[in-house]
Image (cartoon, rainbow, N blue to C red; front, side, top):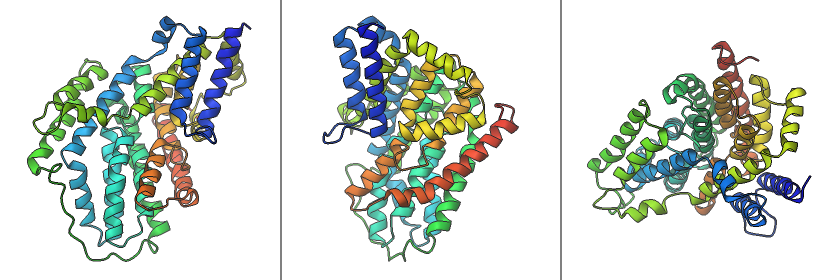
Length: 414
């Protein structure tokens, strides 16, 4: 092996070890920095040329994710999230109904918007409302995280890894929804049942409602909710046409950003650039490593020994292991690089299983970490054990049902 090959392989291993560790101890750096640092070192060393880097980047997936973040910002600026939270708060006198509303809202919004954005917007609102009503926010936050993951598995725009899978495989949007929708709904029902059974006697006694001052500059009344509604309908309608998804989303995004109340730069501030940097770094590092002959021989060896996913059980097992070790986005980027010719059926199974596997542990999904960090800023501690008590049974049950559905429908073998 040449020096460039050794360097590429070493930085690839460094990147994925960093994905597993979540950062570097003693330094305030995260997975995105690790991936981008490795990519920069590859470019500076000459192990990866600019022309090769351009080929490795999936511009369609990056543009689609960017556009969806811009559209999601409109829900915040229009006061939709705050209005929905007040509707939930009215149900706080009946915690079981409130829990049902949290699961339904988190799951549904995550199917049409990027689930990271939904979790980021709803977590602080939910925390403040529940604390004011004297309820323990933990079961409702756990349900929100679990439901955002479960609901996002229903569509190809619900989470970053599904966006990548849909773009890489050219999957039909509504065709995917028809297959993935039922197991996603079943997973949301499981979320509600498990959290209700575990917390029904421990979430506290609701106190009388306290009127909260509306954010006048952000909430303009029912007419302001029309714009995000129309944007969502237009986006879903365009997805049924032959226009590429990234172009459909960008068209809706630039139209949504035309406003008399909100500066266009404010939409840009809402974009999760850290996530886009993570995608970019992973594309470059994985692409550079996977073009090495040694990696090709390694992939052939894994396939020869049956260690690459071919059916439901292998796909579920690998998703659980790798998704909770290095994260579901890095896992999907790596697997798509190793197996660029995956069938549409396996891609659908990968999207469903890798998403549902993210519910297992607190570190299994970016959404879970967003909810935990957002709760911490509100003075609520969402612990690893508290989450795992619900996450483990929810994940195992929902993945088992999803597997049965995929096999019964003839999409995958055991």
